[in-house]
Image (cartoon, rainbow, N blue to C red; front, top):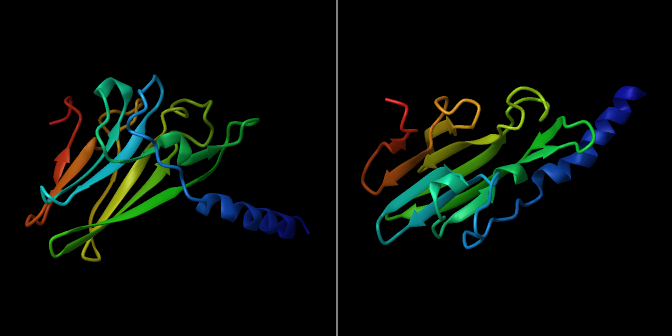
Length: 168
């Protein structure tokens, strides 16, 4: 009986996990604690940029952005991560079609544990249905673990990876 209840509870939570994540308005002045992931599909320049951005990086430019804390749902009473969300968008540059997926990446199973509040995201990019990038973004707890971003240029097979300054 308990497993039936647990299964029913998971089914009830499934629509929450698939609900559309709201976009973040790049014109809002960034404030402490707001970390966003985003992408810019620049058809005129033939570039696709993906990255993670914090207030210390300066003002945001016009791009599609999502707050990290909107990609990770945490129980307000227990601080345990309930589930992560994902956002997918597409971009066409010339003959190449890109699909980009951002998914929440909790710092720990509980936001109050060591590194639990250091939430981030992972990014996966497909070019013409072939996976060309699958990486975690940096977070405050492990700034040299992931990447800061990537730039795809029309005509190039591999992206330019952007790392934190401390990384080689």
